[in-house]
Image (cartoon, rainbow, N blue to C red; front, side):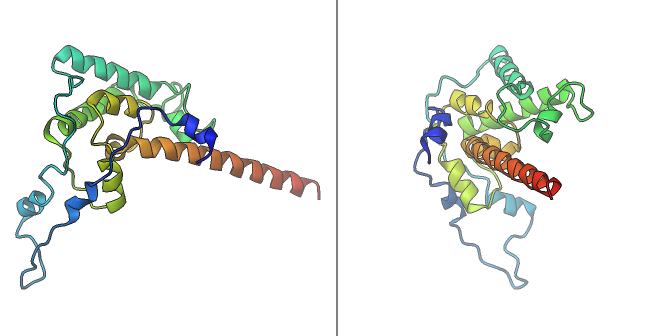
Length: 202
């Protein structure tokens, strides 16, 4: 990576050697009809055990209603604050979080999403990570964050707000991809503009 990109990656992105994809190293026997599970319950059981556990003794996990509310306020404020968003002006993401646009999310829906995020993150840090995800690379990326504390995960989530499981499991991936995508979009826009100017000059 370039020095410029390295400077944009926050210090809290400390990653462990991932063993997340090992959850897929299981073997099941097909029945005579080529089916592995007898019912939904058995299929769920295949991914219902914790794939890894977050640090023990993490005192940053909320234990009271007021602490929960503090996290919710952080998340909602982060969702609504587009001042440091790396997305280009006019981007759909910006419009969804800009009051006055016809696609603006209602504040209560944003808070509802924040409560969902809080519940999922607390579950990871109290019960371990378990989710029906079968993409090897995604599981590896999520597994890299098993050394994060609750507060470190929330802090990183506050830097990017998109797809729920991806952002909660591996927000560092979205953060880094945003940097790359924004740079690519900027270059593409310049190229398109230059092409249009060239057409006008003919």
